[in-house]
Image 1: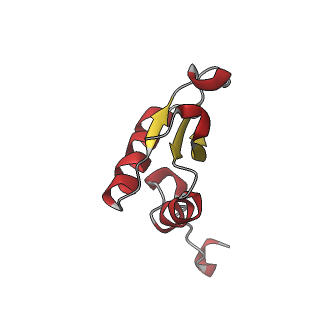
Image 2: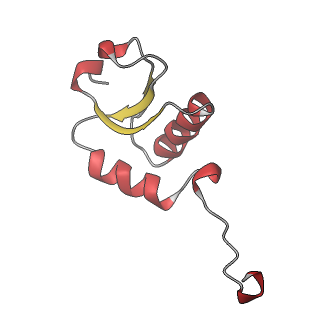
Amino acid sequence: MEPAAQLVTVYRSMDATAKEDCEQVVDILRAQAISAVMLDDDALGWWRELLRCACPPRMPEKAEKIIADYPLPDEVENVDDSSALD
């Protein structure tokens, strides 16, 4: 694994569920053979309470596609577009 300074951020969050979300994203990426890690706000002087998922510089496009294909539960909007609600 590359040093943190050489990794590419593919997901970041400051939400209340950031830790759980990042852990889930890392698990999804690792299951797809991407060496992902979760970095906290101490890494590289990032903002306070910011968590991010990063991967090697040769894999960000693949990682971003996987993240888009597996949205986290709180990112999926369940909208009832029924006209009965008008």
